[in-house]
Amino acid sequence: MDQTTPVSSDAPAANVVVDATDDVVLPFAIEGMSVRGRLARTGPVISDILARHDYPPAVSRLVAETLLLASMLGTALKLEGRFTVQTSSDGPVDLLVADMTKDGGLRGYAHFDADAVAALGTETPTLEQLTGKGSMALTIDQGPGRNSYQGVVPLEGDSIAACGEDYFRRSEQLPTLIKLVVAQSFERDASGTADGGWRAGGIMIQQMPEDGGFVRDLDPGDAPDGSVATQDTAEDENWNRAKILMETVEDHELVDPALASEQLLYRLYHEDGVRAFPPHPLSFSCRCSQDYIKGVLEGFGSEEMADMHTDDGRIEVRCEFCSSTYNFDPDEFKGS
Image 1 (spheres, rainbow, N blue to C red):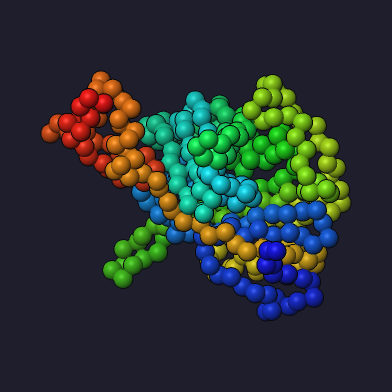
Image 2 (image 1 turned 60 degrees about the vertical axis):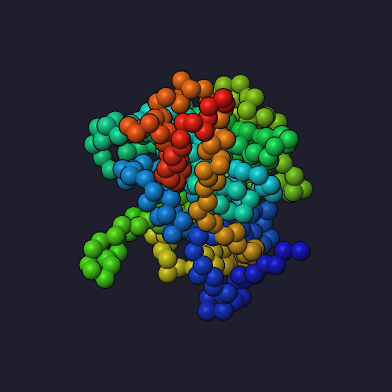
C-alpha cells in the first residue's frame, strides 16, 4: 500500500511535512472528491537539458513546457518502457520531443529555423506563431515485443498545456486542467558573472470516474478529423471547486524554489483535505552511447553516411538530445 501524507484542514501550516526536494513530480488526491493530480517542480534538470543547446529563449520555454507535460503524464502511468510527447508541425519550430523513462529519466530537444524564430520579433510569441499547424502525439513504448499505444491530437489552443487537456478530453474523456510555467533566473557566481538558469513548474488535476475506470469511446489515433468525444463524466460541484482553486495558483508559486510542493498544495486545498503520495524523482538521462550510435549507423548505406564525413575523413554523429558527439572510422562499417 502506498505511503501517503495527509494535509488536512485541521493541521496548521507549520505542521505540514515539507519536502523541499527539487526535480520531482508529487502525486496528490483531494479527499472527499474524485479528483487526483500531479504537481511538478523542476530546476537543475530543466537547466541541465536546456544548457546542452543554444536555443532562443522562446524555444527553451517551449521545450521546458513539453518536458513538464511528459513528466506529469508519464508518472501517472504504470510505465515499463518510455513515454514520449512529440509535436510535428509546419511552423518555425517544426519538431518538439520530450520523453521519460519509468525511473524518471528525462530528455528533450527541438528542431527549429533560427531565422524564422528571430523574425517573429518577440521573446514571447504564441504557440501558433512558433509551431504553426500540426499535431501532438503521446506515445507509450513498452519495449521490444510489446504493443505500443499512441494518441494524436491537433496542435491547437494557446499553449502546450491546452493541447494536453485536449488529449484527455478527446481520448480518455477525463475532465482535466493543466497549468505549466517556465521562468529564466539569473544568479551571479563568485566572480560576479551572471549565469542564467531555468525553473519550471506544473500542476494538473483530473476528475476521475467514480468506479476508478476509464471511458474510451474514441481511440485517440483512430478518431476522424474534427471528432470530439462525448463527455460521460459530469462536471459536478466538487470538480468545479477543484478547478476554481487551482486557477488561483500564481505563476511565481510554481517556480519558487523556497516554496515546497506540500506547502503549495496546503494553500490550495487545505479546506477540503489533500493527500500527497510518494514523489517521483526526475533526472536527466540520455540513452545514447558509442555502441548504440554504431548500431544505428550499421543500418545505413555508404551514400547515407557520406554526409556525415568530417574534413579528416571520419564519420561524426551528434546526439540531438544531449549534444554529445561520436566519431567513427569509416573502415568500421565496411561490409555492413
